[in-house]
Length: 305
Figure (cartoon, one colour):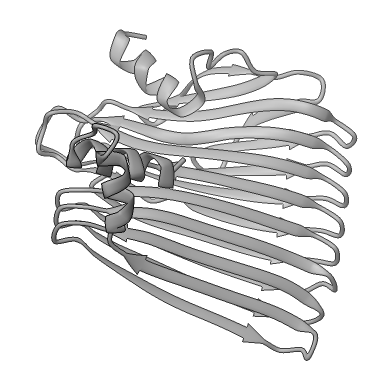
């Protein structure tokens, strides 16, 4: 890999992308490197683009890296990755896509990830997206995450998109069975003319299933963001959704919350707030010697931390 490709890989999975128990690296629409072990198997799909990842039951503390990098302008890459997590397994999965586009054609990646968590399994899923390059071709990312959680399973999903993505539609769908828990944290920054839309659809089917979704976003310049959540509780369950956004310049943010309780014991909460940076926050930091821009940047970085 050249220096650009190495930097993109580090943006997604960190400084040691190959320092994982198992990995699959996808570059410009093709798998270019792979590592497996006795506990984690990665198999290319025969009928579609993508992979199946199989984690054996009782596997503990394995790390799996599934990064995608794109440097080819004009490429539209669509991939279907399925993760089969065995009973009582506990794994960390790092995925996402970084695009470098120096030319005039758009570059796009649509990653459809489907998770199947067996009873008692635990997954921490980290997903990072970013774009860069001097060309006027767009960097487009449309991640889809579908989650199926069996009894007693637990999943943490941490997603970040903090620079360079021109257009994105981010979709997360989840179905939770008894005693399962889904925790989602999303961080998004848009600028210039960028647009980002996020949709969460969570169905709580099992008793004592729970979810906590937190979205923090900053929209600057003339960018646009939209947050849509649809939470359905079909039995005794708990859900808490938070959407917090900072808006600057001529940007706009839209929040569309929907909670649907179909059982008297469904406890569903939605909170949303959109506003500018508080004046007292700016004044406090500026009193320490920061310029107004430096103070704003510090507040935004802390907000998205």
